[in-house]
Length: 221
Length: 221
Image (cartoon, rainbow over all chains, first blue to last red; front, side, top):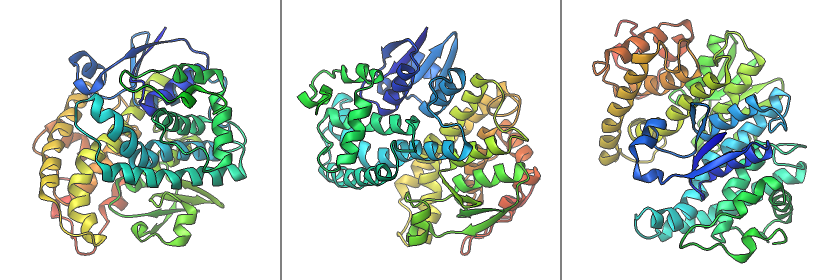
């Protein structure tokens, strides 16, 4: 049985949860208040971050490494294309969301509004929130541009890139920070991915003190 | 012929250059002042970052995606182990250096001291430089701890993790920001990797206005 140390509104954990669910791998979720730096947790992952995956005495850290591991050990259904050039495009977009989107949007909106409060780090910095609200528009437009050429973000098939994007956007949607009216193509893409069985556990997340808006779990949002 | 758009003191470009050289792939290096946002460059990589690799009309961005692509298309010599669990450990450490080390050390030292000046963004912030100088000690100690158990950072064989670490450290060594006397094991590891033919082009780098210290290219530093 796989155990995943996670935090409900961590996009990196959500990406791994989506991969596990899509591959129909059963997982025991253990919520970890990673910012408290529990000694046993730091022994598992000296980087002090979630997600951490354990399976048969093996301990894995870093969502990128975990997703590649799951793809290698449980290749079906494939979440990376077969051809190297197409795999590179999917991985480029995973990096886009996990690095660029994360720095420009997730940190400025989610971490300011939620993580700071949960971790007792004070109030949101309004200039960061404003910057995030501005930047997310550019990212949604970039997604719309990709989806104008492709069925899924990285090509004709759903890949890890779609899960990385959906992981970030679903966290932001939990705090109503995504304007789904901006681009029809992005909304249609999210509706498709949101209705997958793999998404169910994520739509059921509840963070104490932060109830999700009614549209969050609504498949017809 | 492969063309790599790069910047000499970018650790992400250096990682890719090391992989290319180790796999004996000839490459044409094109220096890109990526911070100027040249339109043709942004068309190749809308993230506006180096490295960007071009080969036969194919354009690849993000060093993680590029390295995996090179590993898939030119598997010899292998820079990831064969077993999934060991591959995950190598990839975890690549993330360690490209994310944690980058945020805590490279940004605070290299970007403050060099990139800011080159990009015309003003003077180093001394509190950041101090934080970086403090944090690098922890990272060198972590490397020493790994090397106490292993021949190379991720295990018995040299992997992408060693190249990621060496890419960051070689950039910092260019500005004399690595204390090689702190841990004998780290120094020995760097001496091994520095003497590889793949490292030659990196040791020949010269950044105008920032001459490297004499020990930088010295294999007996």
